[in-house]
Length: 208
Image 1: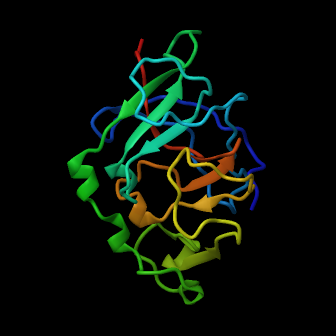
Image 2: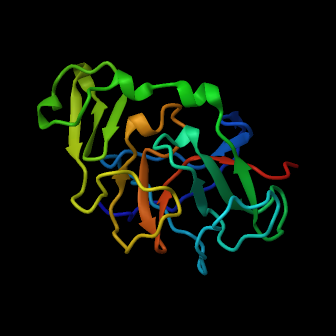
């Protein structure tokens, strides 16, 4: 699976996720849909700041997401997102979301089978989607799983967003247990030398 496909289009509408208002960015289609998701950071990307950046401070690469913390669950982490202020042509700035204890306590992954197994293919499903580091399953017709192994170059443990990577072009599944609120992308990929979500709930800055 490659990142070729439609360009990521940014659309803002506010929902609650974490201790700030976040904006979902684009819809991540499944790999067998007619239009695959793709993602590309702005040119001139810099490493993520060593510390959580100050809200409103300048950043260089629009769409860059940086993750801070050591919890494998995304909703238990602090996320910083680089984006232009809404309704302006100003340079991009950092916005930040902090963990929400309620969302962090959710466990959507518990509703999924414990691990990905080829035997799940065509088995009865009760969830729309379940993912693990080594594969994912979608609930298709007749309430049966349709399962796909992850590409061989996907990491066995989800890296933090912003961690360095060496240029793989695959879309890798975000394990359901790592994203209990459904706020992050179903997919992440290596873009401009950093692991990044293909789409995600991202904080908005300075609304109109």
